[in-house]
Length: 103
Image (tube, rainbow, N blue to C red; front, side, top):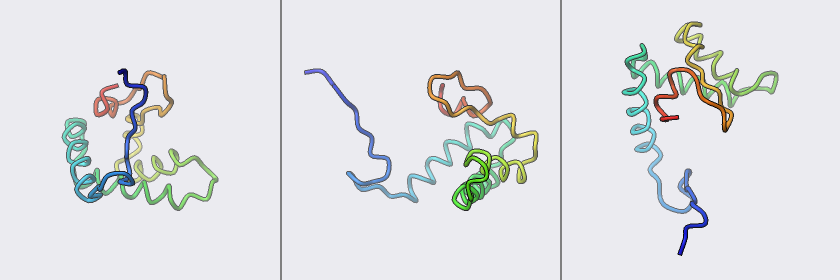
């Protein structure tokens, strides 16, 4: 028998998921990977949540990616925009965050 499909339950609809535990674990791993590039754990997590809030509040005048990175750059400084990675499947990712995802 060969595997024909792999399904991922990313939001706990099929299997129970403790969102708080997942988030803490994810951010812990992320912070360890990008810490050497000048990202302090608490500030990074706060910046990610703040950028996420800006995406939710986005009125459509800009992309969600731009809404996120505009806020992230307000917190960390414009020089951190260089760490933004392309989010297009099939393209080679650039920027320091690529190390986190191994791509």
